[in-house]
Length: 227
Image (tube, rainbow, N blue to C red; front, top):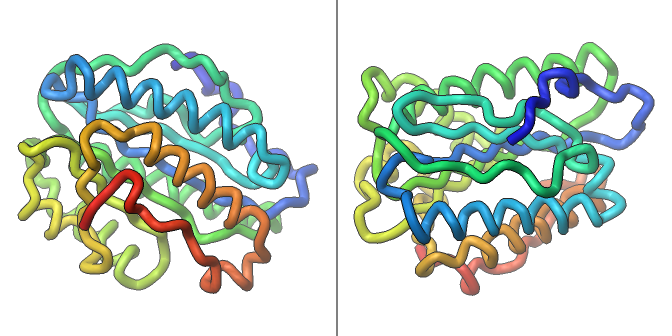
């Protein structure tokens, strides 16, 4: 993805409440081939379709974090309407530094929420989407994972964990994620279906008042996932 550092600012002239979304994406070597290809296609679809919705384009702010042998912010928080809809493709290589990725997400979510408060901008509950075909193999991942899990359990974030393929470490994912709904297994490589669901969810959030977000009814996951 292109360099967005100069865009990692906050448009205070936009009166819409913001919905920060973090995609935590496994780009380790085991994702090589069809999985990373389909992930890239799904991500491009999400960018295009979410930006096309008037309300979502004003509210959704996206950050993309990848983790392989290290964790990197591929794109810092950027208004979805300003995101390049044809980004450089993600490349699969290396190990699975999931803990480092979660730490980056925690750091940036805290900073972004602080920016909202300091600027007098209201915001929806943040969304965090973790997608992996394995489990963490970096050191000291437990503390960051537990901090994120507790945020999900306490309703401070909307936390979704997606297991890709049959080699995902289900037991560890159950430790990492809130107990409800727990990890969701992606059906095959239905990334496009998942990202369409995510777009629909962002439309629903952006069309609601912040005070009503607990009453939003989201479309079912049967098209792309199973519990």
